[in-house]
Length: 133
Ligand code: CMX
Image: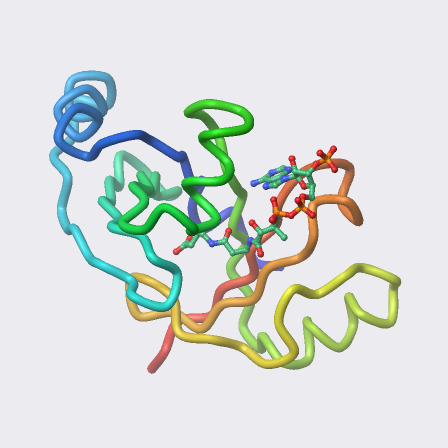
């Protein structure tokens, strides 16, 4: 685990939340990207070393739709940067954490990602991410 790479925040609409976070962070959104396999539209900010990722659902059955239905808008996950995602997945699996995918998958912002179930991490959804070179 190298550092907290980003914090993911579930929002109802980017149209409302991007201007709000631009005001809050005094920093412009530098990128939006649809991640089809996660059924989300994302918007990124980088006010310092750690990014903020806003997540808007683009499908009623997405993880973000379900999360907002149940808990409302708010912090959805914490993502840690790793330098070797496969070995970190193996290590965490052996430590008893529940991996939500067997193999790294392609995430937003040019990353390979893997999620750990919140039930195995004190109620926090954890993402591992490794930059694709
Ligand atoms: N943080 C903390 N707890 C969460 C959570 C989250 N983000 N999402 C769901 N939960 C909780 C649920 O509230 C539920 O709690 P209770 O059992 O106390 O009611 C529990 O986890 C399990 O819920 P579930 O009904 O079994 O499973 P869900 O269908 O809600 O799915 C999860 C939960 C984490 C397995 C699913 O959302 C998932 O696979 N997430 C990984 C992918 C993802 O989140 N993609 C969107 C972001 C993509 C991106 O960053 O690009």
